[in-house]
Length: 273
Length: 318
Image 1 (cartoon, each protein chain N blue to C red):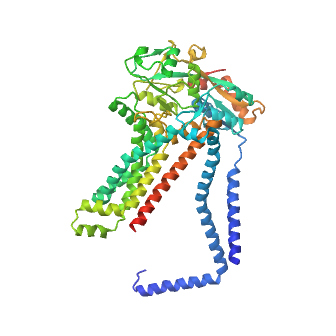
Image 2 (image 1 turned 120 degrees about the vertical axis):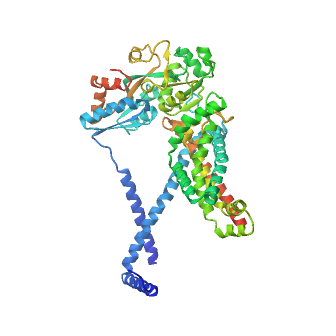
Image 3 (image 1 turned 45 degrees about the vertical axis):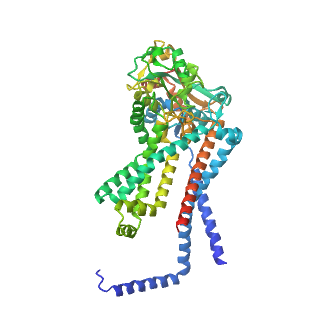
């Protein structure tokens, strides 16, 4: 009998301990004196730079969770972060759900090839034809006789979405490789003389060659004045019905102010304000 | 203290033990309670593992089943096309399933013979110095993070395959198989060496005394005696190969093609989940959970089949 009682007691103690530990885990609340952002991996550089300066100047702690545009938008919607970051324009269903987008900057998407490739200019139309598999050999666009290897990003990536919507090749791209980060795309293109890929202008390095599109190179000026056509907006996503408060509002005002301009352009993108 | 008389020392300690027991006996209830508490703590810690497994299993089933029902189990498992973000999305994961099977089989086909021979060499032929040097090298190989395997694969293996086989691009099934084969080597070697080292020396001595050569002895006596350990090593290798995502994602190309050739750009079950999870929503996200569920069942099935096979072998030889 007494053994049974002890057993029951033991079980009760164990359950209580389990419940206690669970509530402790769930108990971490949000910090009032902090601003959290969540979203586009393409915006890492610019938002990271802004966050760092903001944190140093005000002492308000800043966090950035690089999850992707879709996740960031969802995080704002569910109240898991203060400001969502999206590297594509908001969809109709997202604005219908009460979200507002504010353009922070414009990002040019560079079309990159291996430095050994003799081709240095393509028309936007050619780029689209190459990615849809209509043109499969570099000789058709003035290069050597070699099969074109198409490198792209994974489905759902902001850069891919940007690229495909600008070139009007949605769901029609015949990728040879779908990689999950800008760095991987650059590495893959730098390792294959016949490859073509796309990446944020800000992240293009010397290992690859950025093509001019219709004769226009991707520079700050050409992106801003719209003559370089492969470009997309970087958007700050907030909720329409719950205005930002405290630290988050301070941060939002700061990064959309003229003071932040220099930091934004240093990060390789073109400030919108 | 120098023990001069072993017997008296033993007596002393037994005396001490009985004293201790008596002491405990007097304070019986308190000690018992303490014992129960300690027992409870250990049980709780043990249950954490079981709890995690249960939680993951239940969670996977709950989040994985809705999409399968929505898509239809036949369309899902045997559909040949995956286009999750298209205007008319298609969710067929047969390419991923076949890729995972081919990839794992290829990795095992390369990794197991190499790993097995290496472990026979290390356990039986190598001199102690060579053995310790090679074993630490194997240990190091096991400690290399998978992203490093992926990076090296991207920079060396993929361009290498491109040049050697004269294909437009080297990323694909073959590159993934080679990376996986190297990644499963350490676990196969380590476990096989342990199993082979544990074979009683008497077996080998008896065989040698009967006139068998060392090589005959190792392959006819030691290896069969260690076969369950070696088979377990293979299971571990299969498990690691089928579950690897990061390294594979960097070298396999990740396009959801059917794996018709070694140079085809392919997507594994693991990479299908990890490459799209970050940006997914709605049915796409649910379908990714369903893929995870399929992968989970796959690993359970493989483990169960091999365990069954091992047990069957064990009871036959007894």
